[in-house]
Amino acid sequence: MNLFELAPEYIRAIQPYQPGKPISELVRDLGLDKNEVIKLASNENPLGTSPLAREAMIQALSESARYPDGSGFELKVALSDRLGVSAEQIVLGNGSNDVLELASRIFLRPGTSAIYSQYAFAIYPLLVQAAGARGITVPARNYGHDLEAMLDAITPETRIIFIANPNNPTGTLCDARDLLRFIERVSPDVLVILDQAYDEYLPEANKTNSVAWLKNFQNLVITHTFSKAYGLASVRVGFALAHADIANLMNRIRQPFNVNSIGLAAAQAALDDVEFVKLSYMTNRTGMQRMIAGLDRLGVGFIPSFGNFVSIQIDGHQADTLKIYKSLLQQGVIVRPLGNYGMPNHLRVTIGIEEENKRFLYALEQALKESD
Ligand SMILES: *Cc1c(COP(=O)(O)O)cnc(C)c1O
Image (cartoon, rainbow, N blue to C red; front, side, top):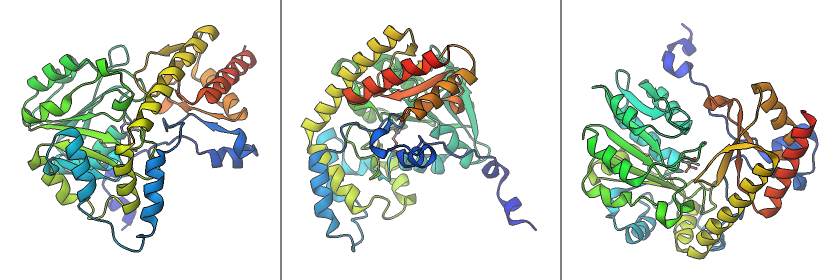
């Protein structure tokens, strides 16, 4: 008996998640100088880490021999004060991927299904498949979520609907009123997961006050991350907000120490670093304007984005897009090809600091000339 064959077919069929190329890998592959390489491939914060979080992490190192507070008490109190939810409604995770997985593991199994949009965040199909459930992909509308079609796609077996708002990698945003009308019409026995990883990058006028909806919808789960605007991608902290009963289920199956002490300390301090988040927002706004102006100048199409990234469209075939991608790598610029998202003619570029955006635009111009 082959042990490998005893693993469920749906596990063996999983295609692992493809992360952005690490700087160290490009340095190894092409022999480039590490300081010459810029990474605009994983939507990380180009300003680095919140200084308050960095200080808190250094302090927390001295307690490294101790297990962390498995309840995350202090961080939950801080989040509870900030967001106006009770601590029982919060689930902390090793990044928001962790809390997305907790919800999936509770509600999905063979015989159930989950719904997500075409071009939505690649983690959703992965989680659904890992649980042995059926993934239902709803065709996108102008690269964004078609909420009406997603409602129509619900079957009696459906347990979860995933919505990323803004969505990665398209940067599209659902209107808050449309979202509310959508949730109102979803049956209460289907969980709606609203992934707001890029919420901090939205102008006030575009924000969705989804926390207020938690009172009326016991089937709503909202997820947030410290990986993006707070600059803590490597430390792995995210959280979910939900009805206390759902949060309770999620807390039962998580690892007892799923968020480490350094992460807990960093997240709590980062939450207080309002200045840093504001600066991250402003840097992204300015950078996005420059980026778009630069793309227009080069005649390169793109999907208008509400995130800290923009997906550009390369004319021609997939091979042309990969040629541009490789040329950018040769020039020390890492972006993200989107072939595995079913967008073979797009490259996703994270908005960097001014220097990085300029370098990307220059490198793109060279790459386009080469491929002429
Ligand atoms: C980056 C991102 C996240 C964050 O994942 P973490 O596990 O918190 O680092 C979540 N959702 C989307 C759509 C993202 O793009």
